[in-house]
Amino acid sequence: MPIAKSEKFNSNRAVETERKNPHITFWEQDSAFDLHQVELLPVLDPDKPVIVFDLDGVITHPQDLKSQILSALGYSVSPEESDNHTARQKMLEQHPERKKSGVRQDYKQMIDELYVKRMSEVPPEDNAVEILRFLAATEAFNLVIVTSRKSSAEDPQVQAAGEWLKQYQLKFAVVISTSEQDKKEALSLIVPLFFVDDSLSKLAKVFENPDACTIPVSGLEKMHVFLFRQLANQQEAPRGQVGDITGGWLGVAKKISELTGNPFLNQT
Image (tube, rainbow, N blue to C red):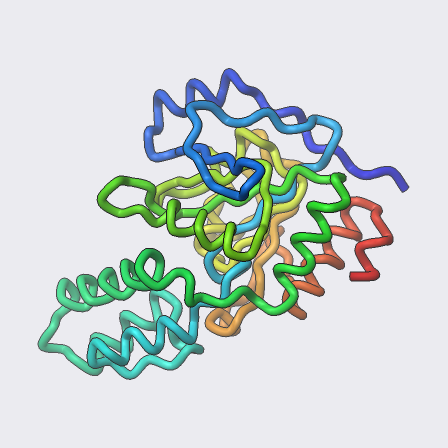
């Protein structure tokens, strides 16, 4: 069975998007795995499917370190409770005197420490490194990261992510940062075959009707969307056209194999 191809991305749209939305930035790795910001979206091979991953909570496993940092700040939040919504709720319950504004500040302090200062301590999800290296070695895919991380000089989250990718020698065709904005505009530039994220709320925003998740935004009708199951999102319930990936990265490899017709991925 031939590999399914993605629609060819539109470089002119990349230019227009950059003008209209300065939050979107493009990053490219050199041969030494160092990450560099580039002005335009790097050219992707139109004959290879575009496979898109979120970084935090899909490729990386930050939940345990999140819990440790919050503990140092005086909160008791388990790794299973470390997603944004649940963690803030628990923090406010434990320290109501901090109010929502104080809890928001403390959570941001945790994120700053986690995603910048201590990023090198964050482990990968089980099997993620091996499978990503295998996918890259096949040279059959355009592997892309689309992350909500910030990339300013004051808040160099993407730069820290680049050091992490180099630490594990993981190579991607491009890393796209949306600086905490939704990802649909970035995704529309590359028209993926496959997109996986660990946040149902972020996945829902690629649909015209986020509550039902049944009508993809224009240009992304052929994209297959999946919720990656990890330690802190077990209570999420996929809906509509959002698929469910269980079994960690072995499940990711299986889904990519099914979509692209590459039986060798089942051997990972």
